[in-house]
Length: 384
Ligand SMILES: Cc1cc2nc3c(=O)[nH]c(=O)nc-3n(C[C@H](O)[C@H](O)[C@H](O)COP(=O)(O)OP(=O)(O)OC[C@H]3O[C@@H](n4cnc5c(N)ncnc54)[C@H](O)[C@@H]3O)c2cc1C
Image (cartoon, rainbow, N blue to C red):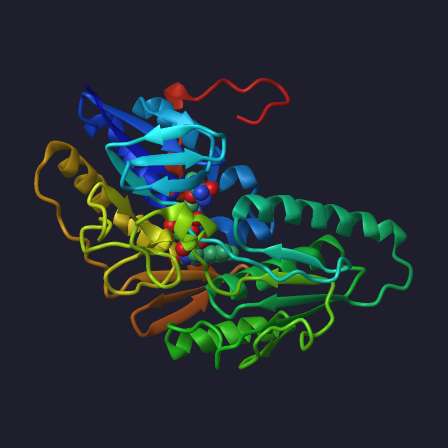
C-alpha cells in the first residue's frame, strides 16, 4: 500500500519540498498538500506590496500549480484538530485525513485587540486577512478624497517594534501619503521593548530610527499597548509578536503533540517532533531545540533539510541535523527606495540595498513559477 505524506501549510519550506518532489519524490508515496489559500505570499515582499511597489500577484507562490507539477493532491482547507496518536488530521472542511508522515509549515498568527469600531485594525497576520483589510482601507482612503472637508490628520498607530512593525508602518504611511497628498498622515510606532529591532545590531537600529524619523513616525519605546492608555488613532497596525495558531495552543485540538509553553511544536535538531517521530515541523509554527527568531529566513533555510529528512523517513534511512547560520544577510525595506542591509554586526542603508533585496526576493518567488513552456497563454484582459 502507498505511504501518505501530508504537507500542512503553504509555507516557505513546503514550497521548496514541492518544487524538488517532481525530481526526487519516491514512487509509491502519495503526497497531499493542505492549506486554506492557494496563493501563498512570500514574507520578504510583503512590505513592498504594502508600499505599492509590487502587486499582490508579484509576491505569491501558486501552490496548486506547484502541486500539479509535483503530482501532489491539493486540498484547500485548514487543520482544525490533530490526533498524532491515530495519525490523522481533522480539517475545517469536515474531511479527516490519515497520514504516514506529516510535515507542519503553518506559520504563526497575531491576535489583535478588539477596538472601537471607528478604528481600522490591520493585523500583519494572517496575510489573507491583511490583504482583504488593506484593500478595503485603500479603497475608502481614495474615496475620501472626494468627501473629506477640512480633514484633520489621519492617525496611524503601529504596535510592535520588530522588523514587521517597522517595515509595515513605513510602507503603509508612504502608501497613504502617495495616494492622497491632500490629507496629512500622523504616525506613531509603539513598542514595549527598550528600542526598535530587538536582536539587531545597534547600527541597524540607528538606521531604522533615522528612517522612521524621516518618515515622520514618532517612536515610543517601553510602552505596553492597552485599550485605556493607547493614543487615539484611525488605523491600528498590529505587529506585536508572533503567536502559535489556536489549534496548537488548545490541548484538545493538538492531542498529545509536544508544544512549547506558547504552543509552538517542539522539534529536535532534525526538525522532527520530540513526541511523535512521524511528525515534522518547520518555520514559525515550530520551536527548535534552541529558540530561533520567528523570521522567514529560518523557514527558507529549513526547507532543504526538511526535504532530505522526509525522504529519509519514507525510506527508513538516517536523518540529518539542521544547523542555523550564525550570520545571515537581513534586508529591511524602508519604503523610501532604500533598504537596511545587516550581516553580523554590520549594517548599511542605501538604494543599492533595496535593489539587492528586490533582486533576491523576485528570484526566490520566480523559482516557483511554471517554466515558460508550461505557462498559460495570456488572452486580452487577462493577467498572464
Ligand atoms: C509585515 C511582515 C514583514 C516581514 N518581513 C520579514 C523579512 O523581511 N524577513 C524575514 O525573515 N521575516 C519577515 N517576516 C516574518 C515572516 O513573515 C515569517 O517568519 C515567515 O513568513 C514564516 O514562514 P513560514 O514558512 O513558517 O510560514 P508562512 O509563510 O506564514 O506560511 C504558513 C502557511 O500555513 C498556512 N496555514 C495557516 N494555518 C493553517 C492551518 N491551520 N492548516 C493548514 N495551513 C495553515 C497559511 O495559510 C500559510 O500558507 C515578516 C513578517 C511580517 C508580518
